[in-house]
Length: 120
Image (cartoon, rainbow, N blue to C red; front, side):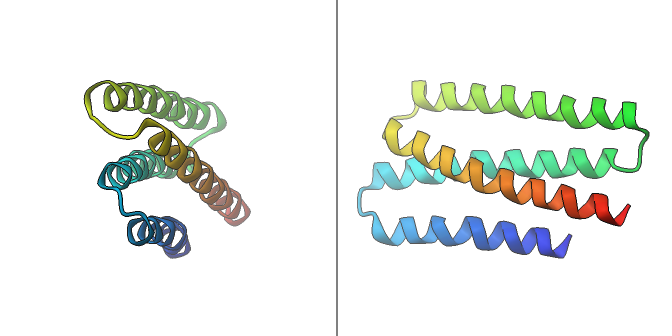
């Protein structure tokens, strides 16, 4: 679990901080921040769903983990729609940062799941 937190911090905070110091436009900074927060919430929900379901039998694991994945995707779509509709940000930088952080966090989550399965 410590390596998971370390990976999340390194591979999320570093690009986020670099973008804050390099980019001068406040709308783009807000876009990147919102994309980062949304994906960070998504990975936390995913890890919690995995931790709740990893000691269960296969059927229960699939229900909890993939149900959590469906919940995360619906939440992600709702938040993307709401932010693009109601908050005045740069949509291109928002969607690009969302995409980049989502890929980074999916790799972190998959690596964590594969390492956890080796221990079981």
